Image (cartoon, rainbow, N blue to C red):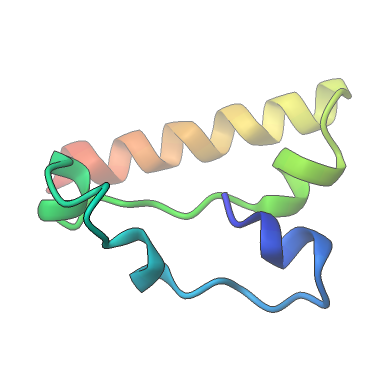
Length: 69
């Protein structure tokens, strides 16, 4: 979830910032299994049932993509 894209002027944070000494041992980083989620749904619209459904659909799509590989 890119908070910067949600609260700034829409500028996304580059995904390469995830690769650093803290995350170097994380399997998802090493195997390139990082999935971006819609930041508006997670930071700005949280709380409503429609947003919750959109969040579940996003997670489901990410899981489907990860298991299809």
